[in-house]
Image 1: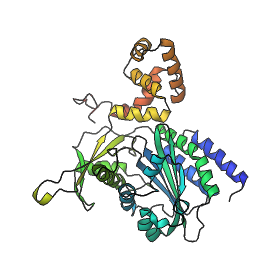
Image 2 (image 1 turned 45 degrees about the vertical axis):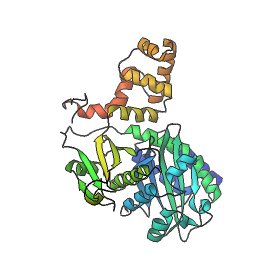
Image 3 (image 1 turned 30 degrees about the vertical axis):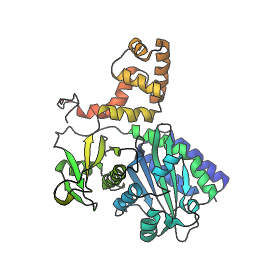
Image 4 (image 1 turned 135 degrees about the vertical axis):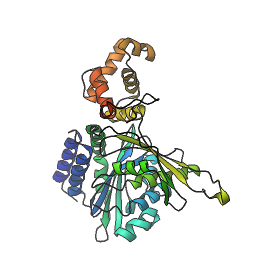
Length: 377
């Protein structure tokens, strides 16, 4: 076990990093290296999650997994398609922050489909520690770190430390999501982005726009963007069987700073001999303003009432109108605004509007406006 001094230094370093406003990938990389110094591991994955659905929205890898994307699809199918007591979704549902697979399963790690089918036979990993990074808005990320056949399992004190630093990771991920600015060129729409996956998990059809969008989601050093597709497909099948309560959806940010939303819907088994049975349709589209605003407000750490005020500000309401709509006094509205400005790091309504909308609107200036009132490019 690392010394108390080393643990204290790592805890302090992670806290400072989480408050530095680092871009997401920079924070994740530095935080993982800091963690590895005091809780050794041979490999790891550090993922962001969509807080509304708890589904993986990006994956960074390090150690023995760096550059290894060949098993990403298999991982997605197991993680979201199997009933695993150590799955991230299971942890979140149970309010768990940390677990060690060896400890959780009393040493019988192959009770976990993920360990039995993938981590042991393919990578020779013999233990995995998982930590969920969440707050009242949902789960923002998770880390999985691994030990090999020559290593001892993760100890209780190490798992305790991982849980202690979880809030710093949560804070750093939230800040990192807000640090990236959109920078893409204005482009014309190239049609719907649709992927169809059959019952054997093969992609049978994909539109040209879908290929383009998947390419936009590919980031050097990160996981295979098809992870998102197969995560959604597996989760959609469980939803169709009544095993889960939430239709799967992921908000994903591309390398050029644009938010996309991915949805999955199982097809009904029509046609001769039920030829479409088991097929799932995945659609990819640019996020609507309200979808991004909801995520950004949560990343700022706004309360429910503060989110209501922010929504009204973004619609152009003044203090009196906000007070009337919310049935509170103008002084209460001003108190809410002060708190919102502090959390968002702005000093005025104009700055707040710019901070929330800039990433989505600024790259599109000059594009045509569609029938929905949203930019087409």
